[in-house]
Amino acid sequence: MKRKKEIQTASLSRRDFLKGGAVAATTTVLGIPYVVTSSVLAANVPSNTITIGCIGVGRMGLIDMREMMRFDEAQIVAVCDVDAKRVKYAKQIVEKHYSAKSRSGKYKGCAAYTDFRDLIARKDIDAVSIVTPDHWHAMPAIAAAKSGKDIYLEKPLTLTIKEGRLLSDTVRRYGRILQVGSQQRSDSMFRFACELVRNGRIGKLHTVKVGLPGDPATTPQPSMPVPENLDYEMWLGPAPWAPYTEKRVHLQSDYSRPGWLRILDYGSGMITGWGAHHNDIVQWGMGTEHTGPVELEGWAEFPKDGLWDVHGPFRIEYTYANGVKVVCADNKKNKQGVVFEGSKGWVYIKRGHIDTHPKSLLTSVIGPDEIHLYKSENHKRNFFECIKSRAETVSPVEIGHRSNTICLLGAIAMKLGRKLKWNPKQESFGNDDEANRMLAKPRRSPWRL
Image 1 (cartoon, helix red, strand yellow):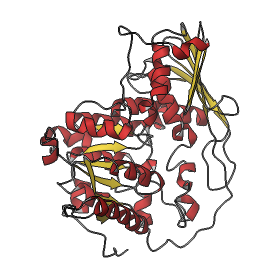
Image 2 (cartoon, one colour; image 1 turned 180 degrees about the horizontal axis):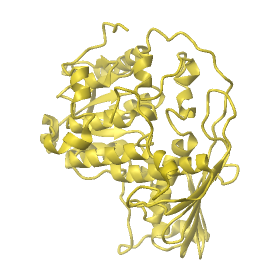
Image 3 (tube, helix red, strand yellow; image 1 turned 90 degrees about the horizontal axis):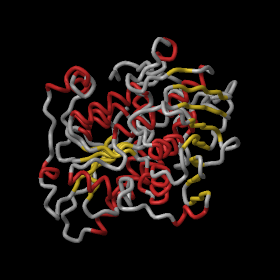
């Protein structure tokens, strides 16, 4: 497919990228020094600008991009998407914003790409925002870390548990800053709810209930011609080849919820869609952010036919080493949000709402000598502050990996329908070969990790 005139290229060749360390992270990372770009080295300068490239500018990508443009310390200098029409639209938004804002004429414009490797090859970009389908999270994030760029990565962290482990290890080995888009950690109500639990206000915690929305099914879909503006082969990337149909990818007419969210080759459905948010809060409130359950059992209904094949109604029960049970289910069984239940009361939290029993907990004050959790009032601001300070973000890569692991374990349990033993330290199912094979997915050549 020929590129449009506005699509630029960079010096990093596809062959060099695939042969180099961006893919073979497990064998070559230690031998390759990471690059710290000029603006990070000068981060203590008040006028410093963090240059950003946005990879993925669809529905959520535009939301994150617009939020980042609100901060004076950040400047979008490049956008990328496999859909050239979406790239063109995002470029127009960025350039209109900065042209109106900058009267000095210092803004040099926004470059546009359809291949993330070209954007990552630029040495003048300090950080990237990655808002792609889930099956395209790990590779560009690993490549960005190895090129010395900090990363804002939308949740869920990765498509598989093995990818998450590799990404976390690579980000930390290269000394990069990564913020997972689990923005509930930057919400004061969620933080307060978790502090109540962590400080024993509801007594001894014994059960946590999580409620998630559901995904619809759809009918079988006909094959369609690939739109001229879409690099469909690149969109599929490491996923199995499948014929193009609009509901597999995203609608060409608008930025509504895309079909890929409901297909197992590209994601896991609401267990990771909303589960990555709420199970992250479960981990935060329980203080289990660097571990996970030791046993789980799940059940789910799956569509019998049609394009969209992620789970429907479901229920998963996790057991932690301390005996606490976490019951995650669709919101017809558990109400949307998270309920922490203890021996002396409960705390219920969802976006925009908190409730407790007893009610007096709502006005409870966390004392100076009690547990105070990481305070962030704005998720994007926290990311930029940490780029400058090199401190850990409120939602760093290892915690994001552990929270996503809870969700992906549940997805495996749904498929197998039997009790599973999990070792959170080794991140394996012990001698269960069938379950262990589901920790990773085959990747189509040449997109190997």
